[in-house]
Length: 318
Image 1 (cartoon, rainbow, N blue to C red):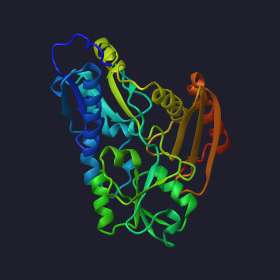
Image 2 (cartoon, rainbow, N blue to C red):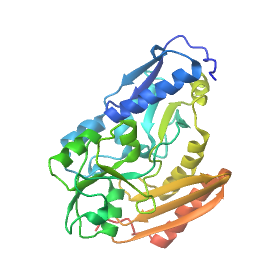
Image 3 (spheres, rainbow, N blue to C red):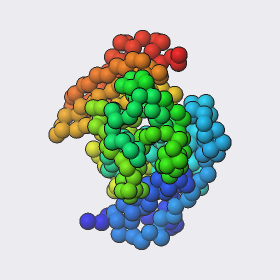
Image 4 (cartoon, rainbow, N blue to C red):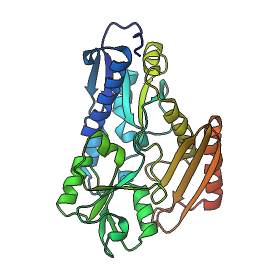
C-alpha cells in the first residue's frame, strides 16, 4: 500500500557521507521513500557531503579516534548543511551519533534495524578462542578493544581504522590476524564473500544503536516530517530510545567503552548494558526489563546502577 506524497515542488535532498556504507544507507532510505509514495528515484536527490572527520581520520590513521575528535567529527558538516537548508534530511549510522542533536534538528525516524551483532573477520580463524597467544587484532573501536582484552589480555590490539574496504585490505596485507566489523554493514554492502563469523551478543555486547539507520531533519520542517513518518519503524525507535538514554546518562562518547542492547518481546523491553575499563581489566553489566513505554526510564536507571557500582575513576585510562 502506498501513501500520498505531501505537497512538494522539488526533489527531496538526502544528505550523506560518501563512504560505500553511507551511500548504501542513503540508497535504502531513497528506496523506502520511493516505495511508500509510489515515486521514481528521481524524486529524491542524494547529496554527498565531505566531512572533515574523514580527512582527519585518513591523515591520522594510526591514532585512536579519541585523539582527533568525538562522534560529531563525522556529522558536523552534514548537520550544518541541513540547518542551512542545503539538504532536507541527513542519513546516519545511529551508532556513530551523539545523543544530543544541535538546536533546530531532530532525530525521530529510524529504518528497520539490521543484524546487531559484531562479526569476527579472519582469513584463518573462526572465533577469538582460535587465536594464538599474543596474536595481533586490529580495531578502532574502544568498546571492542576493551571487550577483547577483558577476555584475552594476552592479545596485541592495534589501531585499525578506515571504511570496511580499507580494513579488509589491511587484514589481507597481514597487518593483523583478525578484525571486527558490524554484521549490519556487511549485509548492507552485500559482502557475502568476507570470511566473517557473527558473534553472539552474550559474548560481545554490541555498540549502542548498532545496526540502525537514523534520519535527521529540521524541527520546523513539517512537510518532511510527514514524509518520514511513512517509513519510520516504531520498534527500532522504541529500542533505541532505551539504549540512547542509557548512553546519555553515562555521558558516553567514542572515548568511553560502553555497550548496550534492547530487545522486545511483546510489550516487554529488555535492556542489557555494559561498561568496561578502557584497558579491559574490569567490566560490569546488568539487565533490566519492563514495559516498552518505560524504555527511556529503564535506560536511565540501568546507567545509574552501573555508575554507582563502577565509581568515579572507572573509565580513567591507565
